[in-house]
Image (cartoon, rainbow, N blue to C red):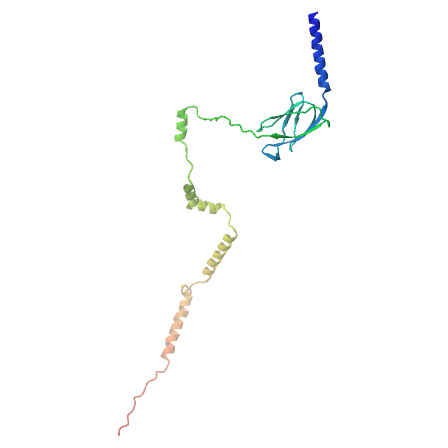
Amino acid sequence: MKKLIGIIFLSVLTITAFAQKQEKSLVQFTGIIHNADSVRVAVPYVSIVNLTNKTQAYLSNYQGFFSFVVHEQDTIRFSSVGYAPVTVVIPANLPAKSYLTQVSLKPQIVNLPVFRVFPWATTEEFTKEFISMKLADDDLAIAEKNISRSSILRLERTLRRDGPEIGSFQDFHNDVLNSHSITNPLLNPFNWGSLIKEISDGDKARSSTPSITSSPTSTIGN
């Protein structure tokens, strides 16, 4: 008899709880999720879970907007990577059967413990690698290598000439051609005969010119 009364009592409680759950009205839950530090910054793709009915899970869009149907007094949990989770309880006895809210997620900074990676199994291996390690050149050594003669010659063979450099090279080439076109006449053996002839003609012209002599001045005596 006692077992029968207990079973009836449990059945009544189950039916009452089920009836209360069925009596809860449906609510259109709508809102926007933003950063708690700045209202203008939306938090996209936030995970939304109905803790009262765990089979319901949603995701906000890239602007932080969401809208779905829940029951009154349901507990909704909002979570996203890098933010502290927030829980919202749907109020009861809503006259419009809709609930509009703004959810603020506060950024959460988690300091992870320091994790050091050592690629060497033993201290001896580290010492060996450190001794054989080649240190990089400093800025002065790099600059000296860049302005060395071998480096400049290598760049001259590989780099193309720009416009001003091509123009200056063409001017130099023209100057060289012009200098070769003007030769020294004394280097031509045929010009020596003309030179000797001009010198001899000049001597003959000077020898044929009459000389002018002056007569002595006579004095008249008394």
